[in-house]
Length: 168
Image (cartoon, rainbow, N blue to C red; front, side, top):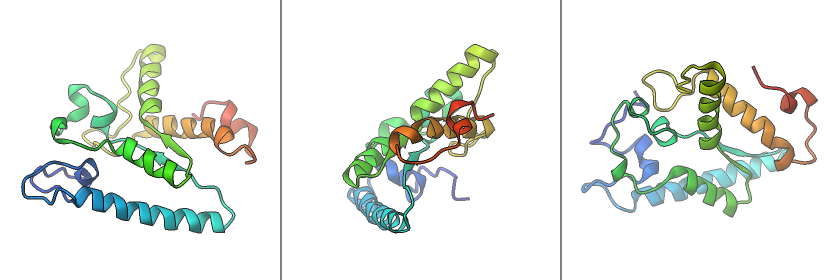
């Protein structure tokens, strides 16, 4: 299972966080981010060469978006994390002149709005999963992206109902 957190093996999802572990090369995470930047550059160039728009949307892992006990079901010890992937990705996107949307605030505000308006809890993620959004999380991210598109791409033609209404 690719999505299982294995605290003894950082070669997986935790590599982006520069998980500190004595038997792991301390430069491994930075090398991996460098390779990612090269791949992102190639992807951006390919998309732009095709005359398309390109944006990076960061969807945080659940335990980085929310701080409740239930949002860190796998008990990932956050003190061992030395890189915030959202900030690292934003730096790379800025360097490469790629529009970037950080999903942390939209997911947090989406959960809060549902709690206030509907008086119910909205996990935003699939139960017992730290990465995959549930339908409410997907709607929240889609709405955040739709709301940002006119600012990010002023010449992009959008259907008026995509940004003006709630994507429900």
